Image (cartoon, rainbow, N blue to C red; front, side):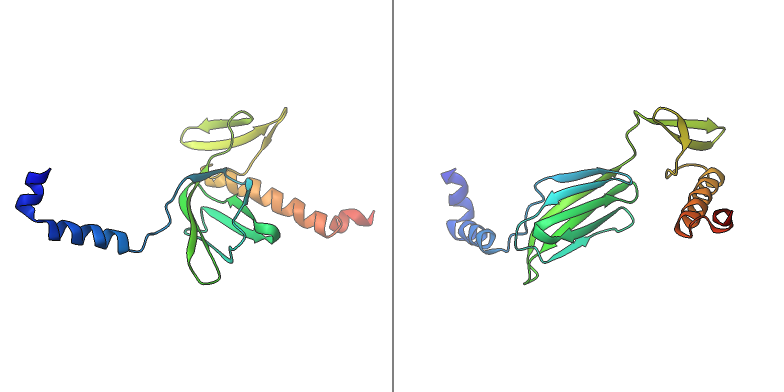
Length: 162
């Protein structure tokens, strides 16, 4: 070891060590958060969090609640990051957020050629809206859900007038 210092010189080595110690340190991304698509996860954050930033809102969404609670919702497959800032704009948390597909225990996928349909089977199988399904199946299922929700909000429309 002393031979290396003898050839290089002690001053450059000490300068590099000093620069490394003085350089600003970014918070380490200690771990990641995993959430399923269309599911929510509740996390407790440090008390001094003022702002939450999600790298890609198409993958995940986050809502800061009172008492340092954060609700993370899976919106699309993939990975993004979650950054928490204090009131001065300092990063106090930086985590990877991974959104995975639905738990397969109760989901059945039916393939018709290259087209896929998804069903929730708990215990009877019902259509479900799942990313990756064929556009026709996805659109029909989503349309039915939208129509049903619209009728529920208006009290059933014409059907309620009987």
